[in-house]
Length: 68
Image 1 (cartoon, one colour):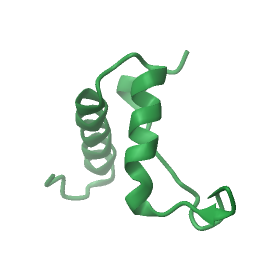
Image 2 (cartoon, rainbow, N blue to C red):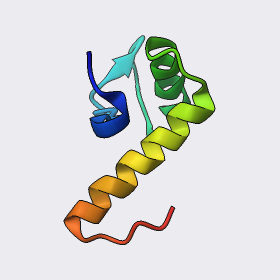
Image 3 (cartoon, rainbow, N blue to C red):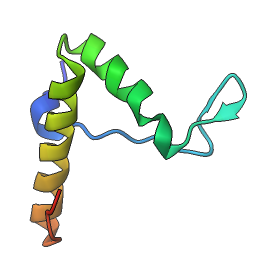
Image 4 (cartoon, helix red, strand yellow):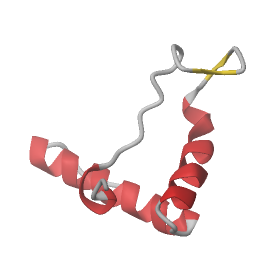
């Protein structure tokens, strides 16, 4: 099982990834968030918080500002 809390960040591969012939776009992120919440038995709010922390951690390791 993936350690979701430490390493997972979403990636759409848009516009190459598609749903019924329609490319995924950044504003489709809630679809990914809901699916991850189901897969990890978490609330959507907890997935959003975890994703934010994961991004902040990634940016901190690269020296980027982590304002979120």
